[in-house]
Length: 445
Image (cartoon, rainbow, N blue to C red; front, side):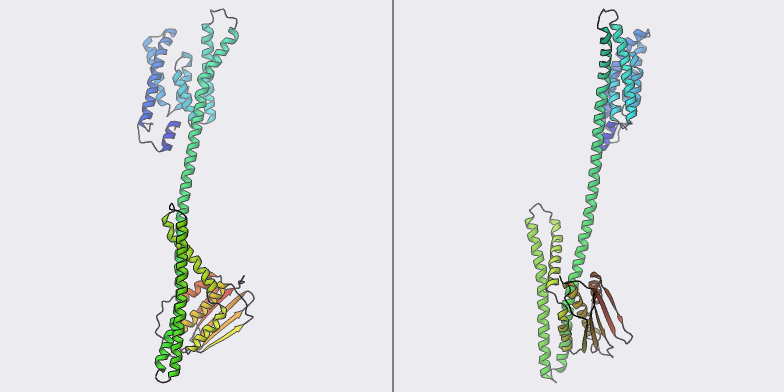
């Protein structure tokens, strides 16, 4: 493919045309050049026929055929140059040679071929001009004929061969540069599209993770408190007439737990609202030119960060486990707490996860094994902290009738694995249930 055709195709302006032409104006241009070249060669063919003592008609036909070869310049530029070199001794085809050299130099042909054909055209023109000039000045007595003839021959040969070749090389290099830049732009556009798709996937993943985390927090906050409230309400109903003092005590516990649950819910909702307001302020400060589609993602991201920070700083910790066990004891559960090792400060996320594991395990006992004896063990080790909540058989005790979504164990496992820990749960040989978790040590700093 020659330079013009390749350039048209690269610009995306081409249509299915006639033969090797892809646009109508390309056909018009080449046909016009071929007509001019044919007229020129036909006129020069008359002179060639006279000098060669051939019929004039034959010279005209020969010139028309030679000039019409210019129609092939886009398809076979080397053929056009070779024909122009071949007819150089007949002193015809000036336009054919100039346009052919330009088209060849601007094409994707190897440089050595371009150089060889351009050299042939240069040498041919040099020889013809030298001979013709020598014949013209042969009858004139000029002392400077020795340098005049070679100078004119070199000047004419260079002026006919060098400019079209240089211009063609420039146009071809510019076309290749534009094609390279266009390919890079297309590649960058594809990469940006891929990055946008990946960013959208990450955003969707972040939203899903945040929904899961919020659901887990809500489950841990509400399920335990409400479960204890239901247990105390049942005990209150049972002893209201028999033991008024115990009924009053249970009623007070129910009220305290309800207030604690409401307080924790308000804190969590306040954190989420603060995150959304902060995201809205950032979007407003970004200007009216910002993409509105990024607002929900920003809200989710800021809300997630704020909720995580608040949960880590203000959430329950290891020191609250004893009070948690005390609440279960007040609800009538027999719970023993055993602590091994030296108590120390852990990172907030470690302490909160340990607390939530124990809380959820005790909540499950209240739901599914009411009246069973429970053993809570904590072990502070050098590189980790281990916790275990194990309940014995319930001996036919009735289920508390509390609703269960089946997400308690899943939430505990997700929390522990997120910190690089180990989580195991299952029934014991004695007919009870055991929940065990090991968290790696992280310094509070």
